[in-house]
Length: 212
Image (cartoon, rainbow, N blue to C red; front, side, top):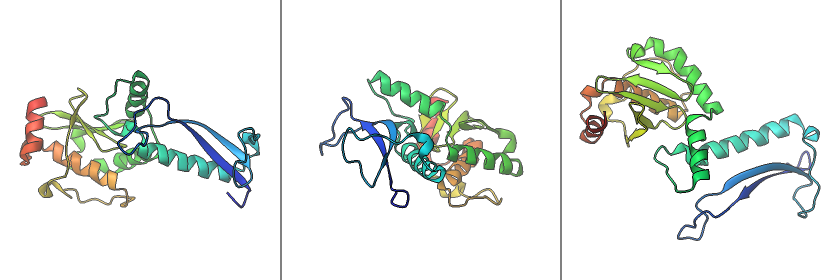
């Protein structure tokens, strides 16, 4: 950040994570955030700046970028992610089920505002991390961060690669932040799953009938 002559550094640890065929680490673990004087860190022994000396706008922007980076790249976004690494599994469970980020809170607030105007309102409940939808064949948990779907609270994911055309835009209501694609996906999935007995896509329907 040239204007303030400050460099921010987010440390990462590769630990013993596996490599891809391209010899790139498949996972990295984020570590400490540190600030240094100048345009780049000159040595490993360079003294870090105390947090209270960092301008608020700098700290705010850096934390926003880090939050975006982690929320997009985290393994916690994948409902089907599994590993033999107990440390990573614990992180995944915490991120997927407990962590609440800014986009999740925003979508939660918007859903609370617009759901009462939808015909499926009585079939929906907005929680901290999930939108719960009660269909006629089962109950579904739509993750507010990723849009992924779990069936009947059994941690069984419902794979929906694409919303069928006849299930798109069944709601006629103003949606704030129309550039939030995830919110649109969540709403379309909610409408579709509320009428799960009318789904004609055989792949989706078979998953529901098999697991519900």
